[in-house]
Image 1 (cartoon, helix red, strand yellow):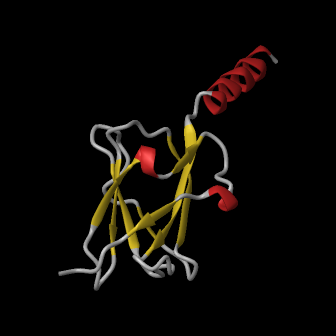
Image 2: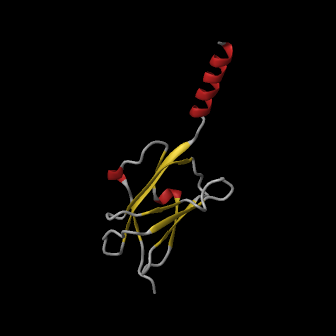
Image 3: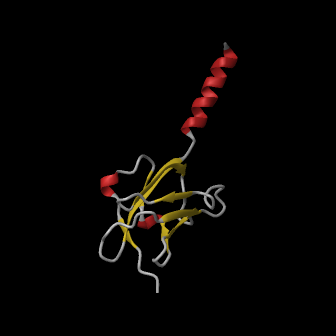
Length: 115
């Protein structure tokens, strides 16, 4: 009984300490039209997370990535889409929260046409 209780307490502590967050934005072109199919790659040095994490914007230009580790200000998101110049975003340019991102409150980030 004592071992089961200790195991339960340890499991609760681990779940409570698992720092997770959600991040998102809407990618648009200069006219404000959504950019569907843009690739968003996370680059989070010294975090054990990032370089392989990749999400794609939907038909409305939206991306939301949930249940990621609590990213710090050094974490960058690189947005790429053929025909547009790549753009690197910081945490301050996107919606970032310790719970689910509200899709209605996503900021717009603009891609410029490639030269």
